[in-house]
Length: 183
Image 1: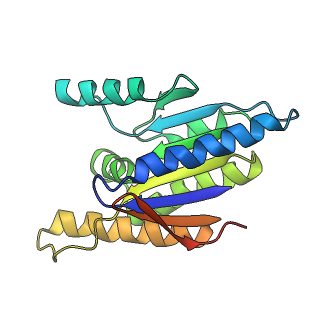
Image 2 (image 1 turned 45 degrees about the horizontal axis):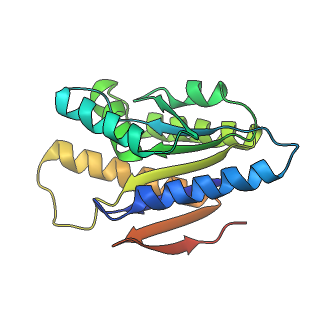
């Protein structure tokens, strides 16, 4: 199952995604034929001392049920190496897209191909994938070319993911709104 969760900064989207992922993990544990793991896939890079401290704080705030893996760009490779029916939360798509566009110079076609790969791998391996992203396209118009390109790419990746996922939520002030029903 693939679930997309978006929201503004500090909206509660990551907490809600963690809740959904934990519920799925515990449901799978009740089924004795499933021996899955629970992963938190962090796309942030430890670029400076402040970011290192922030990442370490987030790791320590989560329970020890979570295995944290850092994957700023190569998520398909990481997904291929996980076991069938594992539960994973990617946090967040926004940083991953930034890394891909500005470090790998990936264009929209390459971004969609990579996300398609995540979906294909998740379906084939029956992964329970929760993808967190930021709502950035609800503010004022941006005149800067690079920011405009980034926002355009993020909007298109969001549209694509929502069309392909099983469920989609938007979190506003800690309240989840379900826009697409799980199947």
